[in-house]
Length: 89
Image 1 (cartoon, helix red, strand yellow):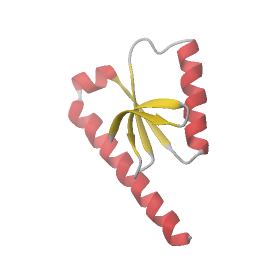
Image 2 (cartoon, rainbow, N blue to C red):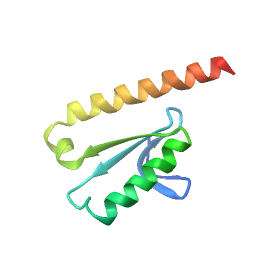
Image 3 (cartoon, rainbow, N blue to C red):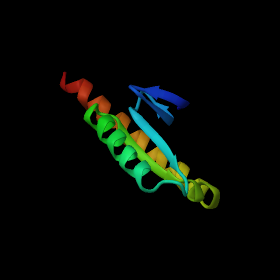
C-alpha cells in the first residue's frame, strides 16, 4: 500500500495497485458536500475496476485488529479477482 497515492484525478488515503484496492479513512467531517464528492469519486474508481473500502477513524482507534483483518480480506479478494481476470485473457 502507498499512502496519499494519486489515483487518476484523486488522491487516495491508501492504495494497493496490485490489488486495485483503495482504503479511505473517514472522520467525523464526512457529511453534506463531502459525502457527494466521496460518492462521485467512489463511482469513478469502481468504473475503472478499483474497489474502495471505507473505514471510520474511530474504528481504527477502537478496533485496529478488526480493521486490519477487513483490509487484508479485501486485498486478498481483489487479488483473486485480478488473477481470474488474467486467466480469462
